[in-house]
Image (cartoon, rainbow, N blue to C red; front, side, top):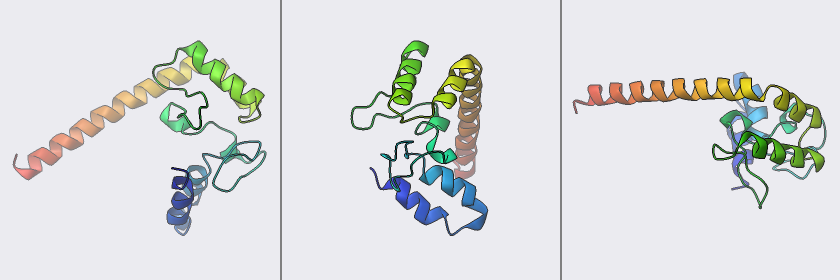
Length: 133
């Protein structure tokens, strides 16, 4: 499991147009205190400031840490983020900004997920139409 971020870096880094994507995707498991992986980046690098898999709308459970998922309430999710911030695993100002804008962010995520499902279903239907089934 812990090798995925490293291999993401190895695959994407040589492609110059994907340098920003490579940085963010390969460093998404790093933590402010340097305890993350694969490079143990410490401190203020932007890739190390946000929660793991934040773009997916959830944190995944890693070694018993709290996970933000669709099943958590707003209060549980924010509690988990504040706890991680207190342990210097997340950037406190970022957690505060998330809390301030939580409802708007959740709404935007839900809309984006709904649109992604629509696009995926359309893609699947197009594949079915093209295969003759």
